[in-house]
Amino acid sequence: MQYRTLGKTGIRVSLAGFGTGGPSQFGQHKGLEQRQQTALVRRCLELGVNLFDTHEGYGDSERILGKALRGVPRDSYHVVTKWSYHSGGGVGRDAQAFAHSVERSLTRLDTDYVDVMMIHGILAAEYDSVIERFLPTLERLCE
Image (cartoon, rainbow, N blue to C red; front, side, top):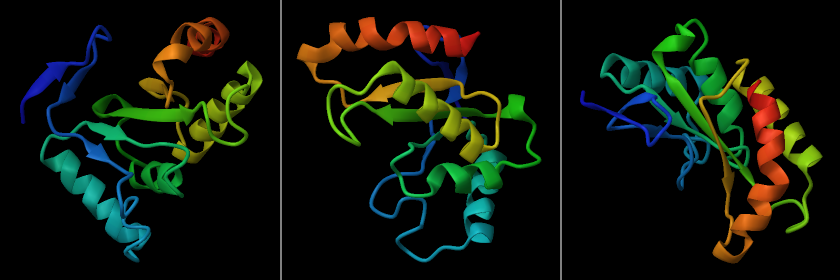
C-alpha cells in the first residue's frame, strides 16, 4: 500500500480508503450482516488501508464501523466523519447542533476522537459564514 500525507494535517493515510456511503451504505441496502461488514473492514486493514470515511447520514454506518474496528489499535487507522450543514432543518443550524452531532458520532463510532471532522455540503457563498460560526466549536472540541 502507498501512503500520503492528508493535506496539512500531518496524517499519513493509505491511497485507498474505505467509504461507508454510496448506494449500498456499507452493505446495509444489500443485506450484509455485522460479521460480514467486520470481515470487510479487517480485510482492508490487512491490505494496508488505514482510512475509513463515514457520515452520520449514512444509515447506521458509523455504528457498524465502530463495531468492526473494536479491538483494533486506535493508532493503526484514521476515521473521517461528517456533519451535514443543510440536513435536519436546513441552513441556520447552530454550533450546539454541530457539537451534539460530533458527540453522537463519537458514541456510534465507539471512540473518543475522530481524525478528521468535515462540515458537509457547504455552498461557496456560505463558506465564510459557516467557518465563522462553527470553527470556534470545532477548535473547542479538538482540545
